[in-house]
Image 1 (cartoon, rainbow, N blue to C red):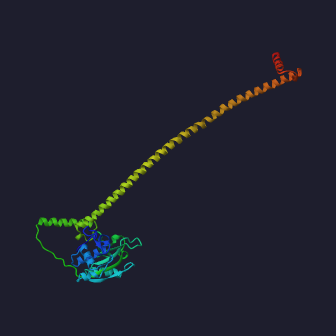
Image 2 (cartoon, helix red, strand yellow):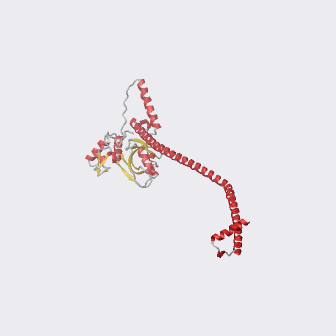
Image 3 (cartoon, rainbow, N blue to C red):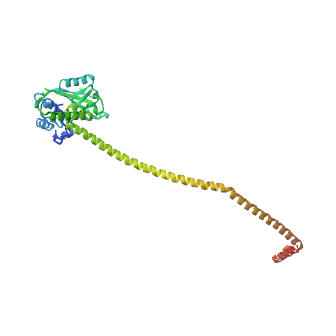
Length: 333
């Protein structure tokens, strides 16, 4: 890849695009076209190309006008645009691969969240392929990556493709003489950088820039930070649940002790029932004997009273006289 740009570069991300957009917000297509122009040897940046498009009527509202590019750059010809709502056919996939083989990068419109029914539109520049997988320069972060990194097959992710014809810029190589020690240091550094890029799964590891590696590492650090924050939250929640479980265990232990004490008292009460019953049975027998004795005494008094009535009609005696008669009767015995 000749040159990769990010629409979110601080040097131009806040520049107005079209009528009321910004390069950072909606400049993915224009940034992809910028990378395509650099492929053909033009030294443009998203900032410079955006200004040229504004000056020459290259936007309709916020919409990019494809036909303005050949007017601004006479060595670049418009190739065509194909829109499709259906998954790409093998013929269409072969067409894109053929253009890349010819040295022509292909601008792709993709759905960044293919799992939803809504088209989450984004434009990227396809510069290479690996079977059915395309290597694309992503203008969002300025990184070359696999199109499958968006979570679906290219046939399901791509909704449109377009291209401009031009002559790829010739690579000019300068030969310089450097000391062996410095050469080995540079080769070692390049090797390490490539190894790091390969380890980070950066496409085109041979040409991975230090900035692209930094961006990937920054993304990893951000993910680690998010994970650590999530872990701390889950750890705090776990400790809170452990405390709740501990309190429940303590409560359960107290309830078991209380239940054990109540069972003990109940067993003691059940054990003492026969003894208490015997005591009351004995008392009942004593009282029954007393009742029997009183009944006998009552019978004797009734007999004595009858005798008194025979000897002295009781209705003619006063209460004191009746008592006196009874006392005398008892004394005689």
